Length: 390
Image (cartoon, rainbow, N blue to C red):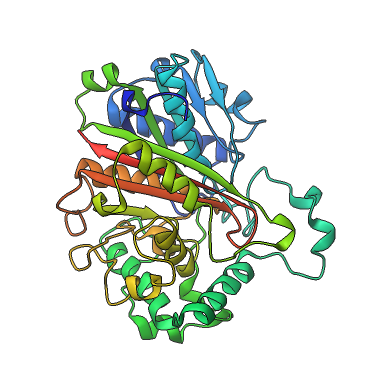
């Protein structure tokens, strides 16, 4: 990786409280999360000289949304788009830009309104109609749940994983979401509730699937000297990694994600191992998504994820590997069907010691955020970010 991540700190973070943005434009959401993140760290729009956004930013990438937000002093822009993992890759790119002297204060925004805009599970600004693999897919309905159901079924076949074990991922999310006043779903559920919810795509039930929401969030990353001048807890970007997983003409292992490579890079750069991580924000589009990523990031061996997530092991204060203490995409927030930003936000809150007291982990020196974008059983991208307190 180019650049030195130790020179960069996350100084500002903000999650929009809305989960349904009727009467509010996407541009307005971007402006509000930008202002929220800057207010969080005491910086202004004029301090920002690097801007990062994905396809959810309206107006041809950063070209018009930067003006709408009020960013007048930009020296560096980036509109990398890799679905839900985009914002973790933006952190990696912002760190590189700061280390190379291209900018000093980087702003990353994410916001969308698929519920208010009646957009279903589509991703704003992404046109799949010209995809080169489309001629091979007409008999197959396009919906992410079908692909993830295939992964879950294969994991069950290979390793004996059960629906009860997958359900524990949702149970953990609900235990955390009850403490989040903005969470889309706050009701605590048990394993039987998950198994008794309607089947969507065998073996995934409705409660195995994430919520769809409006909203968004923003992150501010600054050079070390600037971070030290601000009256906020410092969160150092200790390691980052990104990777692609190709369809490869159908010749690939559906149980292995790009997180194997992105995680390896991030851990090597940070100089730590999965055993050092005390909290993790793990992308949870479906319960099986969490299980695969925990394996691929090295928190447990391949094939043992079902046992690892069971019996409350992911619940803060109960298990040994608390994840998604805001309720995650399964219960809290999944704005624009791209959940990478919310994974970063809760990781920052945990690293600062600012998560809800009922779910804050005691030792938060090392935390991890990880996301995938695209479809895990096929073409997708992964981003991993490791944060250190102080």
